[in-house]
Length: 270
DNA sequence: CCACGCTCCTGCGCGC
DNA sequence: TGCGCGCAGGAGCGTG
Image (tube, rainbow, N blue to C red; front, side, top):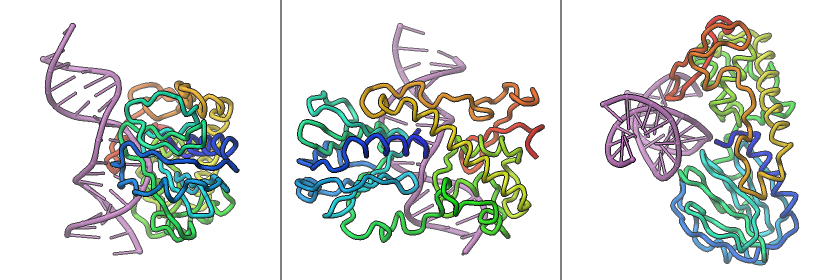
């Protein structure tokens, strides 16, 4: 389940290997991802050097002079640079070929996406109305405070709203709220400025910690089957229903919010 | 504008 | 042992 740190690690590894390299072909084995993979990618991209490989929210963007290839990993997607001779596995849906190497999208559940956008990237409908990046200065306590006024939505759903702040997935939403000692059902509009500042700091540190944990195995993630046990950092709340809170020893509870499991400590989080 | 719930898909874990 | 059910989740989108 790639969250923002995993996506960013993937971006760094691939950018290092493929920036400046020229695409020689594109092979689509299964175009039925979240959206149909557009036809004609091989014609659009062959001969194009990769100018940049960037990220916006959880979208990875391969930039060429001809346009942008937008990739989303969904729930189960992985994107890896492999020797072109690497055997095809089930669910290897798309290859961007660079001579004797290949950038391969593997995605069992097909929640991912591969899109083509010839124009300026900020114009793309999926990217246009995204909120701020969580690891930039634009995301601070007063931003969260101002954005949340009058909003009755539980804070957990609010921080997962990509129109507000991008890249906070289900796991890190629970973890950040635990660290900030905020109950996930608290109405967003009722949080004080001080609590918004605390929450922003904890969202940042949660993401940064995961990034640091992943950074150490960067090479594996990009080049090998590795990646198992990857971000198995110590969660405080996520997935720990019925276990003891690591801070107070109380029970970690699970509730469903927005059709998603939410974990919290009823004693620590108010 | 806001709140909420449906939907896509496959792999896995659990219960019988 | 084996089968089948239900859950897991990113995020766009439709509905009220």
